[in-house]
Length: 326
Image: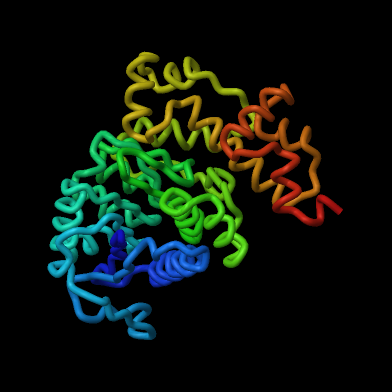
């Protein structure tokens, strides 16, 4: 029988990702047993404290065991952390060291949402791809520059390490793992029982783009402000770089280093974010919104919109604006 360890870190963390993981895998085990198979996993919650409180003491979790009692495990699930990532990492160094050692010993690891911060701090994500909540992406990139963050992806799967995007999208990662360890039939059963949409692959439609401003390059900040205040214009990079008296290559390099996006990507994301808000809150036509954000070619607008959100402008409006659909 395989061993599944669901980590219970110290500090104010996300209770739902611990409970949800436990419930889904417990149910998968029961279903598997009902098919005449032996239970696939022994499931244990493990931590470094006998009890961890959540939401100012409203709830508490008592792990089954201390991590020191687990010498060998097959799969580790790291739940979502609170938003004070430095504090969470500092208060859980024993757990982080244990995770790193278990990975070296052959365990696979799945991190939920901002649990990626704990996983990355162990060093095992260096040079690998991962995802996390879109709202934490800029902070993550600053803290872990050696990790290839793909914040638009809902799930990543690389070298026995699984990560996922934000919040309750962890349910999709659990289904993904159930299919991987059990089979497709069991994953579909869990999908139906817990009413989770199966095979979701992107969190792009949920992203709210605000732009990385936590950098010290004043020229780039001015360029960002100019892009954001001139949405209806088609701004060329040459125009921007000359406006700030910087060579094109140097401008590109500084912009990418500061924001994580090329100037063109940044402009596209700002424009599409504005278009999304217009589709959510108004009854404007696709063409009206397109012109407002500086596009004149409907094909180009649709392509960029789909690339960033994962759906067409019409699909997006239909999902988020009931009045417009009516």
